[in-house]
Image (tube, rainbow, N blue to C red):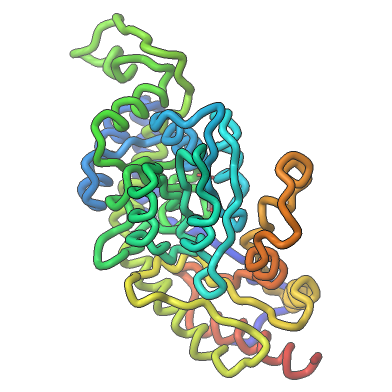
Length: 384
Ligand SMILES: *Cc1c(COP(=O)(O)O)cnc(C)c1O
């Protein structure tokens, strides 16, 4: 498809169906704007879909990660292992609990947390590991859970990219103790803003369920319906991290589309593979044989040539690219407060310099992929 100079091809475009928009409109018209029936229904369907005993809806994945760490008793004096190659919120939440983040390197082919480096960085103080299924490719959960069990460490999964990803044939969300999903606007399943925590542990589920709403012992929404009363008790000072019915009703519709959308994402990613595989200047993302990939992102590495110039060029050609991620240890706050050794995180530093995400969303067409791949191939043929 020949692109019109005037129209810019964005990195991401949301597409909501008429039915989804109507569901949201109906909920707004119903007058029940906060947590209520639709949140309960979304949680029920989510736990059934992902085969987890409990699903607790929250205001964001960030909120879910913080509550998960705290429910497991992570706090002052503890160390939490975490990749630097992630979104900053994965690391910020560790500080919100009072614990100390310890950065772990990634693997050079999957860009996921390295089980070897986990082993190197475990100390007496290590209480938990947060793993991130980068781009939607599951981490090596069997290896990581085994190491964690041996050392009595909790594993918490940041599955912000991994809604619908599978590991050894099972959905991410039912493996380790606690998994957190994001429904941010650009994620594979969206409620605009929002998140979900899944767990099979009733004690953890209870704690998170209370701490998302002030530490109140009963869901507040029950206070306002027929069965409810004005009475409630507060067990501890919780937070205000609940989800609204307006978000949840969209989430219910999005969950119904998740598998189909991920299938489309996979088809589009395979097309990128086929159009770009002959290009010697870039490294394409891999899929491990244990995995079904949600294809949240399609990250490539620009080997040898300047990544930032390439992004600039593509922008001039009318295509929006993005970078996932600037390694967290390189941000001012973390550089100043949690400096690392020069020799540490060598793969993270290398990948962080080279990585760039190409547009990938379900409403893209084969022509879109071809147009973008052709621009990329031409750039490296002509300019370098
Ligand atoms: C988007 C994202 C988050 C944060 O999700 P929110 O729902 O916006 O809080 C956390 N981790 C990763 C890896 C993400 O990409």
